[in-house]
Amino acid sequence: MVVIISCHHFPDDERIYHKQIKSLLRDGHRVLYYTRSSSNLNLSDGQITHINLSINFNINTFIDKVLNSIKSAGNIHQVQIHEVELLPIIKKMKNIFPEVLTIYDVHENMEALYRTYSERTKFLKELSIKVRNFNENRYLKFVDYIILANPPMGIKTYKNQSTIIIENFPKIEYLTSLKEIKQKKRNYILYHGHIGPERGIKELVYAMKQVIKKVPSACLNIIGTFRTKNFEDEIKNLIQELDLQSSVKISEQVAHSQIWGIINKHRVGVIPFRRTPLTEENTPTKLFEMMICGLELVVSKLPPAQFFLNNSVHWCDPDNINSISQSLISALNVKDDLTNIHENQRLIKEKYNWERKQKDYLKLFKD
Image 1: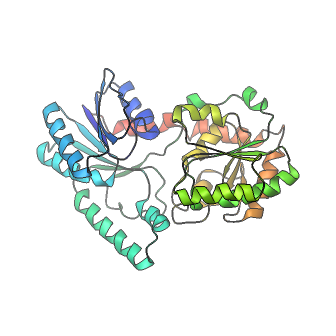
Image 2: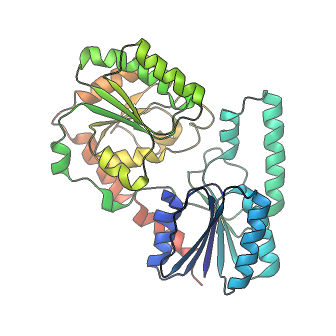
Image 3: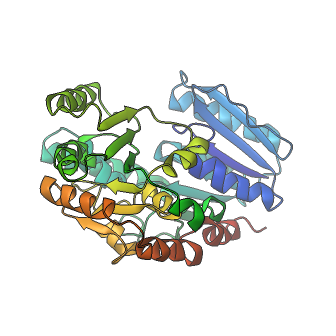
């Protein structure tokens, strides 16, 4: 039996449940799945037993309850965790079941994440990072494999560990046909994902003022969750100040199962990230989702995207409103030429798909 544990993600998380767990189930594994969330969703179904614990439990209590449950389950072959806070489980599992294979899935470069979001002084940031890394390193000797969700650009923390890169590529089943792509007529632009200053949303809204002067029918849809209430107020006020209410729409984040239909209604996808430690390290999953759906892409010229793509996107300079607007206008003016879309979908079919990556993932669970 495989044990999968997460304490911060929703039960039906796109990477954990829809890709990894479903791959394990199709491969014939039985899965014991623990989550800690406010969701009432129960994913138990034949081969999977899902136990969701209250978000009100602190991490230590959650760990204790999960361990007690695992002990009674028995016949455990592999344990995979998805957050650094759960590393104590790995140590305790090794003490209880020395033969169990332990896997630590690192979703993001946490150092870059902290350097981007923390408002502390540089000295306190770096001190906190050192403390975090020290605490993490205490447990790494009990980890058999580390999964990284991005190519290891600047990631040195795990250089002495057995690591494997398993990116969050989409499934081939979501590939949009060329017939559907050719039917897209409206000048809809899409940004979807987290909504925060580092994502270049403010610059994007300013850019739309220039875009509609050249393409009056252009409409930007921003879909996601604001990182802070202050930033939400700032963006909504900016839209009003620029008189863009009819050209910029904001919607709340939707379930992953619904996002595909939404992406397919748009002609252009935009990823206008600013240059930050986070955006210079982590590959945006939305990049591949927009590629597979056949959107023209406007993307900030940053190392993660450049690692995967070359000339099949409309590059823009990070933090540059004029560059973003010109790239959006260029993308909107592409009508019948599907050269970029052909190339991006070819890359998806040949390289950047989950079906190729799941083979590497499943190898970790061979008895």
